[in-house]
Image 1 (cartoon, rainbow, N blue to C red):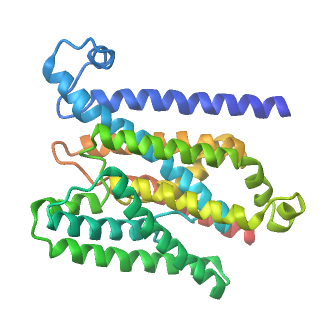
Image 2 (tube, rainbow, N blue to C red):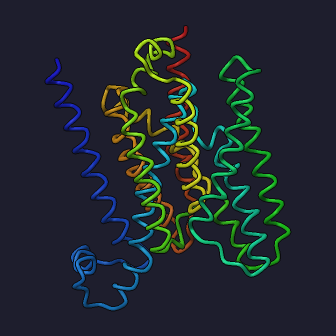
Image 3 (cartoon, rainbow, N blue to C red):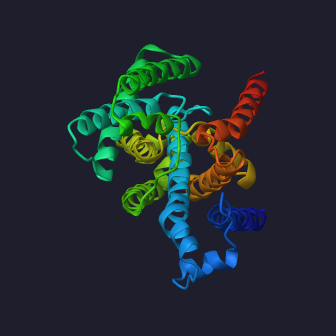
Length: 339
């Protein structure tokens, strides 16, 4: 039985890795200008002969594709942490209003700084987004003391999201600067306009955060069995809960700072990964969720760029199309289990 589980894990990881590699290559090759895969490989290895292709790959598509890979994985991991924290299958950065809170503070900071002709750095965007994400998360946690049912907690999170989104739209609407007006695209979720500076900063932040999350696999496994059980095993539950809040907020902030709010990836991906691996063990789920989120976002971003080319669809529109049915199925199955 154990050998079968290990074999399943290995096969599932192989499927995810192959999917990541394939979609990564397709995202670079496919677009308004089709670039042969052999040219893509040559350019990435520094042997590109076509200058136009080289600029498209190195200045536009490669940094964007890396960003989709990194942020997609981070988004799924944030969703997994929130579902573990709240013991709720539909908890996620977007549903609980965390992404919207981060979006609001980033928009405010950008309006203030751009209005004074001050350029904000990638690190500054993450800090601004973290403040908003942490504030929204704090408000949700305050609600948990007054609200007993998780369904009502989710409703409160959705309402927080609507309020923050309304404030963001109000700020953007009354902005005069052309750069700020362009925030409309970002506010609906978009991976366009990624730079190598953005990629470097997000990669460092997400890598460090993901490693910390992976090192928490053992206490997370105990926490999943119940707080009393975890305490009995010597787990500092209060510290663990604080770490879950901070890490999930940090991951959510990093995503929103660069790509805006992206819906349903954080909710749907952990469930798809559980179905694929047939396990909920954190030591498996953490790397699997990261890879699964990357696959999900790479696929959706490829569709967003190419379905109605040269017009680009909002990434949240595509992720909602594929993610919402998964959430519906999760709710139906949860109701059947209770019934």
